[in-house]
Image (cartoon, rainbow, N blue to C red):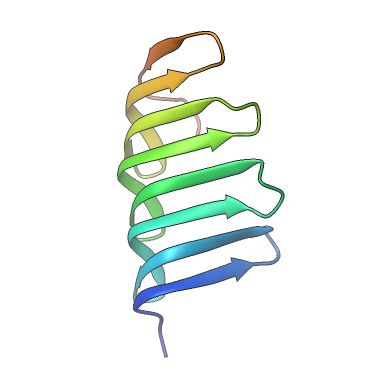
Length: 95
């Protein structure tokens, strides 16, 4: 039976836990993905197991990235570091 609706799924191999909405066994809707060592947190919209729509990430160095994601890529948003806030555009790598 495939997961649908609200739930959580620890992924031991990747050492992450997802809590949120599922559709057809995939992350879909609002949810949170966190590394078990607290070094990374994404909270926002998902579609087909990818970050899609508005979301916020917090990285281990306390940087916060807020914006709009498409297929796991940040396409528009802001990055907040300890010292400043800056505009963020498309990143070259998945986040």
